Amino acid sequence: MKSEDIVLRSLLKISVNMKIPESKLFDITDEYKLSNLQYSKICEILTLQGYDIVPDEEIKIVETDNTKINPETDENKISNPFEVVIAEFNKLELHDKYKCLVKLAVNIAEEDEKAQKQISNNFMQNIINMNLQYTYVAVLFKSFFESCNAFGKARLSDLIDYFDKFYNDRLRHELISEKIDSVLGKPGFTKSDIRRIILFNPLKRSFASKYLVYDKSEDIVYINTFLWDFLSNDDKAEVLKICDKKLEQYYQKLSK
Image 1 (cartoon, rainbow, N blue to C red):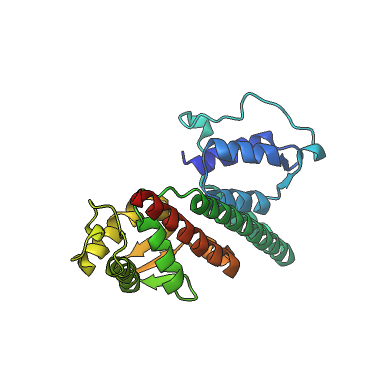
Image 2: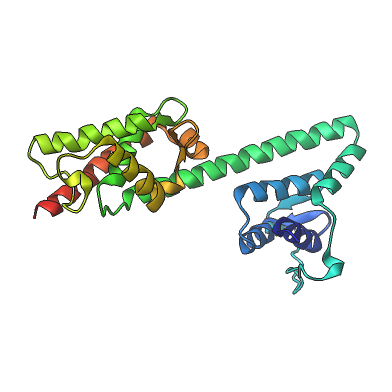
């Protein structure tokens, strides 16, 4: 049985007068580690079936030891919840269908905003706490935010050019560019070297992989849509400022 089905059945079991306490919704969805998309689907199903998710104080929460459902028992097997929703939805009058869809749209918009805010907060915290083992992650974010278009997409070739200029400028000014064990720590590296570093280091082996994705078919790097839509111009400027500060601190340590 899918985790969504288990959670849905658990919530229906603890409902009181077609109402479900929000604390139980949060506890059970967290217990089964549902994604934001799965969470939204659960809320959609409950709404279309006429259930309300309300603050705990609005209802008397029925405590039970049976909120956990054993997915192995036959009696707990249920049909696809979406088929149930569609069947129930089709029974409604047109104006009631409209009300359900409007309410669903509002719920989805609210959940999207919550998800955007959460991922934005996580991203900024990751940037602030960034601990550079090499300069690659900071330079990647600098190159991305200075090269991406209005849709949060950047050509990999533009990022490579940025890396090439960044490290070669330091070398030309007789500054340390990277640790000596890095191919970017001495002259002679190629754009193929840079491409390999970008794709297999910061994009695969750092926290950047949670936010930036490489699209091989278009040879572009794009940022998580939820994150991009929520970041303000001030946020982006702050990211660049933090990256510059982290790089300055990194090179200071490397020079000692």
